[in-house]
Image (cartoon, rainbow, N blue to C red; front, top):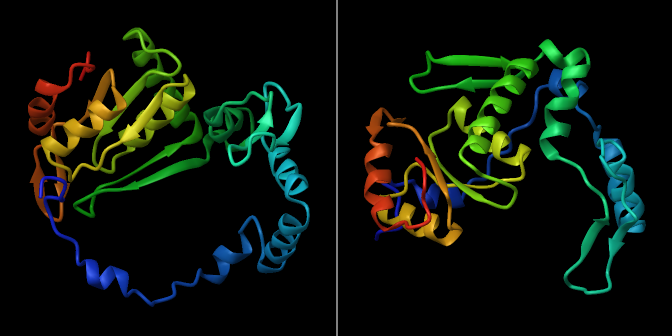
Length: 227
């Protein structure tokens, strides 16, 4: 089948997984919410849905606050935080540059082979995300445009995703195991103007030629302007 991955997964094994992975005590202590607090939050969410989410939203920074938490006038097409304006990347990254987290590790990447490992602080990640966002803007991309990300699990993949979100560009992440035909379908569905990819990737000890798949796919992708 053309939609299948290049490498088969043990589907039956995954479907019958019954193991429970419990966090280490030191991880539990540092968690943002304890089991007891989780139960209280769950009860509040069931009792006061709007109040629950309004409290959660107060933990973010907004460029403009909402006029209304929930608009149910066109149910089941609900509108949350009507009139509000924020940026998810600003909250996930930018605001931490002004705090003690600036030089804290923001992302840890473990590659294949296992010897490859890299870390980026919030500030380092912030700079790289801004650089990538600037590249997209230099290509003429604007809010609402689409970008296809066809990459393995790299630091650059996260940077590309954050860079898109920062300027309001919609990104679609396409699994690096998909064939050229499957890639073509998804790029055309999104009408992506740009494809972000790498020359290749490791996969279970083998090398996948991603750029070759992109070159084959874009022959029938009229919306693509840049790779």
